Image: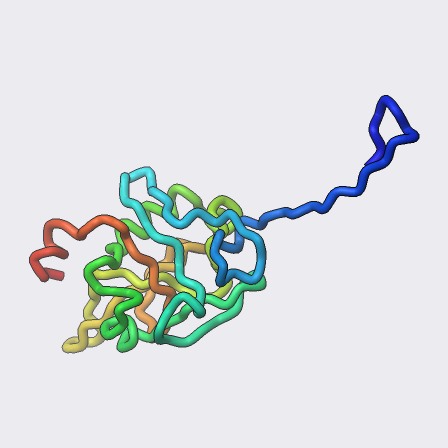
Length: 167
């Protein structure tokens, strides 16, 4: 670096930069500034997804240089890393999508959009007899029923129908 007033003085400085697509965690591969929690305009506070090294179970998937935890429905129901009672409803995920449409949530909050959908608490009937959990694409706002998805947790307790066990 050269000082503007005196070009004879030179200093060498290390530069550390951070990226939005990595959390500020000792487990992250990059220096990051992804927030640990974020709140939708509807007032629902969410936790960031967990890195694979921060969980005790589940699969993993890579996105933006980090390895994220990725779980099947069965793993979601039995994992202490992703408890059912902390899962958002699909409407809450859609509100979050509305705040950051068309994949902007990756540039705004750093969340991994290319790796999958986000698990919702509420269920939908598949066929005539099978209830399945829904997932929401925070890239497109579409709702799906899939086998594997990201675990994304609300930080506050569920209320209303979810707390009483109704779906």
